[in-house]
Length: 279
Length: 196
Image (tube, rainbow over all chains, first blue to last red; front, side):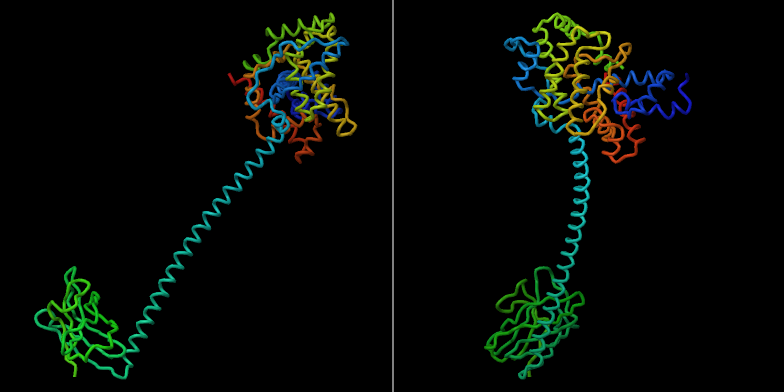
């Protein structure tokens, strides 16, 4: 009979269960009846039976206990001979240990599923960790920025405080400074000096200096110029800076700005850029 | 089908020696039984142990199997299959019976089912002694199945579960189990055939 028809279509899938002996009795009877008339299914059953028969060869090999041999030979009802040469089937290393066998394929399959699941889980965890790392790193960067802003603001407030302290000092003196020929004819500046609290200095139109040179501010006393500190100008030639000055400095007769080597010097050596006389 | 033929080929020196040993067993030669045990005891025990996962039960089954071989050697019909194939079929059948008894559920004897596994002698599907390489091929072929195909086949083969029990265990529809098992066996056949 041709391998078509509703019976064949419905029954052909049973071949696998049939050769493994797993069909329910009623189904088995029906399938066997079908096999009588369907050469295709019968041929498939023969060939799949061969496959099923091959399955035992794949079991993990386990060494039987040595006592089993005498037990088996005792079935003859005669005394057993000493073990002849024991022909051990070749085996792959690790396949003869009972625990390996007791795990078995089913457990191996389960383990595989678990392993795959763990692998997937681990991959997703890694992705999450990586995301979190990025986020933490971003937050860290933002925190750093915030810290820097706070530090900058604190610095500004401190500066403003210091400046305010100077500007509100009872002994405040204001000194206007003029740009000097020929280096800074356009420059001008102003200093607010309190002997007790320090000096606030502001200037504009100062020319940029060569690399390695700096501006230095001096309290010019009757005895000698005393350094108040060095300063840099911004791109527009402007500066506003607060200097703390020693309170034991003699009353200055003038305030001056000179150009000096970077870092400043103990006594002025360079060109005067701004000079203002105290009153 | 080349490999399957090689694995399952009837023509093999080993199979001839087995048949000769069975002939001598039929004449009461205890040495012949020892020879068969020494040749195949390990695989028979391994199969029983794989199914029962218990050393003592596996030993009992091995003893049963060789005892039956001793008693029935005279009735052994070489045309029905190889000695080793017969031993393994019997081992699986006995072990699964014991397994079902352990589950203490009334089950039909698996003998009938196991007999289904005895291939048509006309087909080139008679099992002979498999070398380690052949076992490796079969394992590799099994590795090529989907997890579901493999587990379903193993539940039927090693646990002796029925169609319905497998479906229940795997929480799959009956039709899916049926299809997976057939597809798995067809794929095994194909892989064993194409492995050379």
